[in-house]
Every structure is written in structure tokens, then in C-alpha cells.
Image 1 (tube, rainbow, N blue to C red):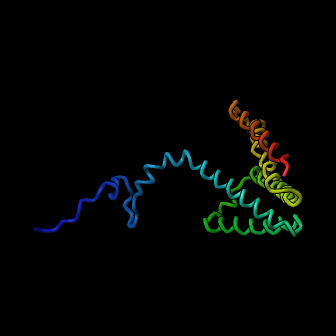
Image 2 (cartoon, helix red, strand yellow):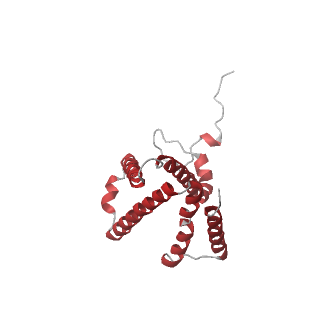
Image 3 (cartoon, rainbow, N blue to C red):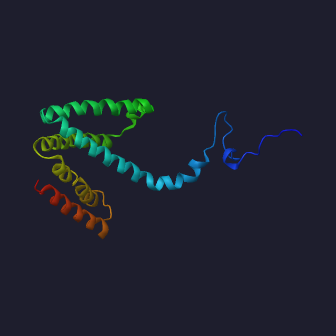
Amino acid sequence: MRWSPPVRSRLYTQPKNAPNVPGFRYDYAAAIFRPFSFCIMWIVFALLAALASAIVVTLTKAGVKNVDSNLAFAVQAVMILLVSWSVILGQGKLPDFSTIDRRSWIFLIVAGVITCLSSLLSFRALKLGNASQVSPLTNLTLVFSIILAGVFLKEKLNWQVLTGAAIMVVGAIIIATARE
């Protein structure tokens, strides 16, 4: 009896419309979960950003203990600069730099200045207060973002969003005024 290879399952065969490129392998899992991942990936990234921000607050509080808050921010700013430009270079996005229009430049520059101001204020607050009390107040950015999005970006704000924002404000105040 002659041996024949096993029948390949559908998961390992190329679809008829897949490009005929050597080394190309169609990813069925990505194709199946792509609509689902599109719906939740922003949530995953947002939660990871929140986790990273919490870690930053903790590390900053530990690092600013015996250091001037402005100097501590300057050290972190250098790292932000190095990492962000490394990502741009690694992704090959440097040529896109020249495609940024004037209006976007203005918004990005103003946002950059305000980001620096926000960080300097945050570092000073962490130098003076407890991270567990400072962080809820600095995270009222969520509430301010909701208000600014409604006013300037004309986003629709429903009762759930407004109620959630109000609960955040109350929670931040309760945590910030808690006695040790």
C-alpha cells in the first residue's frame, strides 16, 4: 500500500483569493477574529495605557522622593523622546514627517506644550502629596476630556457618560480627602 500525505485541513490551505507570493501564508485566525478584534482592541489599548500610567505614577513617586520634581520630569522627558523617535524610526515612518499639514502642526505643538505643563504639575503634586491621593485627582482628566469633547469636538454626551463622569468626580474627591 502506498503512503499518501494526510489531507490538509481547511485551516492550513490558502484561500483562492490569497496572493500567490512565495512565503505568504494566509492567517485564518486573524481573518476570523479581525471584526471582533477591531471592536475591542481600543479597549485593550486603553486599559494597557491606564496600567502603564499607574506604573508611571508609582515609579515617579518613588523617583521624585529625593530629587527636584522638574529635574525628574526632564529625565523622563528625555526617555520619552528617545523611545518615541525609536518607534518612528523602527516603523519606517520618518518620511511621513513631511506630510503633516500646518493645522495639525499647530495642534500637536500646543498639545505638546500642555503635555509638558501637565507633567510638571503632576510631578510637583507627587512630590508634595501621596500617590494614592494625587493620582485620582490627576485622573480627573477623564472628566475634563468628556467636557472638552462635548464642547469643542461636538461629541454627543448621553446620560450614561454624564453619570459616569459625575461618579468619577465624587470618587476622586472621596479618595483625595481620605485621612491616613
